Structure formats: C-alpha cells, structure tokens
Image (cartoon, rainbow, N blue to C red; front, side, top):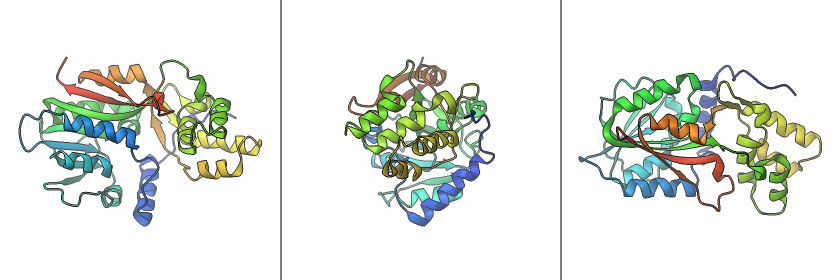
Length: 287
C-alpha cells in the first residue's frame, strides 16, 4: 500500500459534515475530552491567579466541556470556531445553561480581529492546534500571543508523538492487550489512530497523520482476518478523513515555549495511551 501524501481536499468541509451529524444526533462525540483530561483542566483553572475580574477565557473550537469548565471557575467564555454549525451543535450540549457574557465568534484562529490585544486571561483548547495545518501553526501562535495578556496562560491538550518508540503501541502488541482485556476498544482506537500505522500514515514533512490511510490499514487488517467483525465495526464507526497535525512531545513543548514558560502535564499512568497526549500549560510572556 502506498502512502497517502495529500490531505483531503476539503478539511473544513469534513468538520462541517461532523458538525451536521452532531446537530442531528446531539450525541457526545468520541473525540470529546476524556475524564482524565478534564480533571487536569479543572484543577489548573481552579488554581489560576487572575489579575483582574471578570477574567476571560478564549476557547479554541466548539468544546462544550471546556466552556463548562471555564464558566464553573468564574471565567467569561469567548468561543471561536470557523464553523457556525459546529458552534451551534456543540454548545447546545453545554451542561451549564447560564453563561454570563458568553461570546461566539465565527473566525479563523489566524485572524481573530474582533478580539482586542492582551484581552484574554486564559486560552483553552482540546487538540485545537492538532487541527491547524503545519504551515499555519506559527500564524495561530502569533495571534494567541497577541490576544493573551502578559501573565495569562494557555491550557492546551495536544496529541503528540512519543520521543522514543513505544513497543506496546505496535499493532500486534496493542491487539494482544485488547483481547486479553488489558485495554478497551477506545484505547485501542486511539493507539491505532495516532501510532500503530504511522510508518505509512504519517507525513513527516507536513507533520500530518492522515486518517484516510489509517482506516485503509484497518480495513486491510480486517480483510486479512486479523480483526474480528465486532472490533472492525467499532473502529469503522469512528471513520474520519481528518488530517491531524502532530509533533513530537519535545518539539511541541519547544514550539509552545516560544510564547512563554511551558510546563507539560502527562496523563495518569493508568491511561494506556498517555504517551500520545499531554496537556501543555504556557505562561505567556514568562521566560
């Protein structure tokens, strides 16, 4: 099988299709932040020291769980996404219905012109930068530096690549752990999506993992009899054509560290895929 070297022609269109499905079903999507990730966000927000009141949180993307976390900690949310459909569909799932001063902005994160300089206290994102093309990442980071006040911080969960190989994430090893009951199908899916097939699915020039190629590999495993029907059906139910921009863990920390002091918090040891995700806490303007 040859590598897929080009992204889908219409990435915004793929997210628009996802938004329409969310609007129709109002079902929590599988890519929503996990309880372990939300626990980190909540703890970090509770510990924040805002310099003025009311503090404002910029939420990158329509992630209702992050909007709820911001509101629960006294922050006024400004939610920015390029899709009005996604904003409407996702924010309808917010648990906290009273969100004083909430603003919804349809905009590209590279040019959030309606947000004033140094007006944001906290920036929240769940895999947000993973959905920014490599060539646009620096533009987004410059815009985040512009809107965030000095001393404010970014709290970003990012999908990352391990700095060293993880044997447990190789195809056969992950499958063995699934069938022995050591991991569930959700953990198995995440490892396949972002590691097991990277020799073919990862474009190292664009730092992009192409979901189309991952699912093509999954189909091959099923056709070869290596996956059972129930396993294949679960994975196929998460079919996607999204290209995620993914950096090595250390590279991601260095990239975000250009905005200020960067701390990396990893997921608990109990999370099988913990080496594929981390929460980055960046104090803007702090060396």
